[in-house]
Image 1 (cartoon, rainbow, N blue to C red):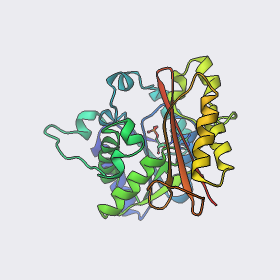
Image 2 (spheres, helix red, strand yellow; image 1 turned 60 degrees about the vertical axis):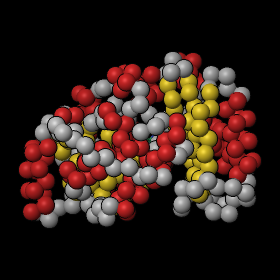
Image 3 (tube, helix red, strand yellow; image 1 turned 135 degrees about the vertical axis):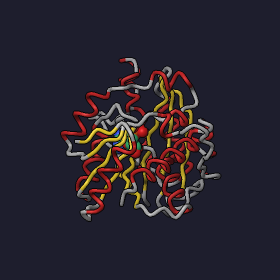
Length: 277
Ligand code: AMP
């Protein structure tokens, strides 16, 4: 596995592969890898001759400097996992190369970025869209793989790729969970043991809501289930039409996406589920 600290090192490998007519799949990550990330790698591996992964803790998508500072960093383990999964090249760039001196261009999905999770974390989706646009331009893959766990992020990226006529296929991969239902996340390691035990309340709430056939009933069920867990503070609850990403209401007639976020101590966790009629 090629480990590239500079974009030019990846460029050389990419041009060899392109010359040989090989297709390329891209998985972008912030490191601290777990089985969720590896599901994206496996999906890319199944579809492409070459798989490129990136590890970059993107400063522009963090609102809180403390969150950026304390974001887990486990590079040696990450590289071992990527190598074992058959990744061909990993790019671990420096922020100064991703955001070169004088950098001033941003990418923003103007409606989507301000809604839902974006309302709780101002600037977050602008940072995400900007860095994903840069990474897609750097790697120029045939397809890029993103987790459905970050449901709004996936919608933002699909919107950006459509709007900017980017020639890449975006593939969503189902959320990978722990045995007790907790969605795998690099942030889970920051939970106290008590909060870790309480955190599966999010997936339980989503499962209970999936049994309802009306949007108001889904919301009430989630508030009730999360409300029963004193360690969880519900921060965001949004139910959107899966096709338009506009708020859903009334009886369930088309697929909807339920997005929730909740605070456990100083850790904000998110979870998501799609429900079809
Ligand atoms: P991150 O390193 O948190 O930026 O995540 C990198 C990619 O992995 C994103 O596309 C995430 O949506 C995806 N991802 C993170 N957690 C999971 C999970 N539990 N299941 C599936 N994909 C995930």
